[in-house]
Amino acid sequence: MGLVSTRAQAQTRSAPWRRRALAGSIDKLLVAGPVVPNLRRAVTHARAGEPSIGKLYPGARVLVPAWTVAREQLGSPGLRAMGLRIVDPRTGDRPQLWRSATRALVPQLTDALRTRMMPAAPPRPDEERRDREIAQIKERHADDAQARDRALMEYFERNRVATDYRRLALAALVPSLLAWQLRRRLGATVVVVAGDGAGRADHKP
Image (cartoon, rainbow, N blue to C red; front, side):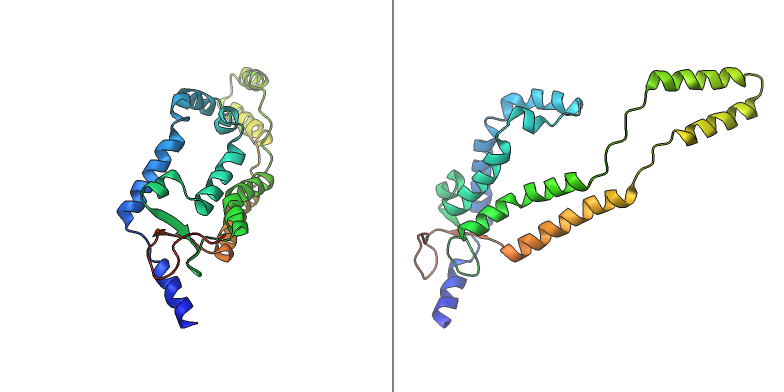
């Protein structure tokens, strides 16, 4: 038992931060390559209130989790270039596949839950009708400023869109708590130097 514990501790020493940072930079450059040429389109979609990622990259919902799993299980180009690998700190070995897959899907699961919990968007007001009704109120009370102000206040109160703040708060809180609980149960990972430590340096199948 002592030998196993010593081996796990030796193999789960975190790699130097410079090597981890360089590995992350290499991976980000490789991932950002296809994105950069489409930044202008992404900005256009964002200003229009459209989901740019889904429109520009329909396969992003599959590719992002797949990249995360492959990075933990096989190693990314950046990790391999810097001689690093990802391990489970409890065992010193490669993370179990089901843990990697679940960890990769946590953001999508919480986003889907948050979307379901969000209150429905209020209907867009008919601006032409609103302007016409306000103009009519002002015209009816053109000679009485106090009556005009009261009528306008009553009009805006009748047409006020109620916001469900309780549901908004739950939609922000519950998915975050779920993600925290899932990550806690799945456990963290550690980036270590490949071959460092007292045990076998290669990944277990």
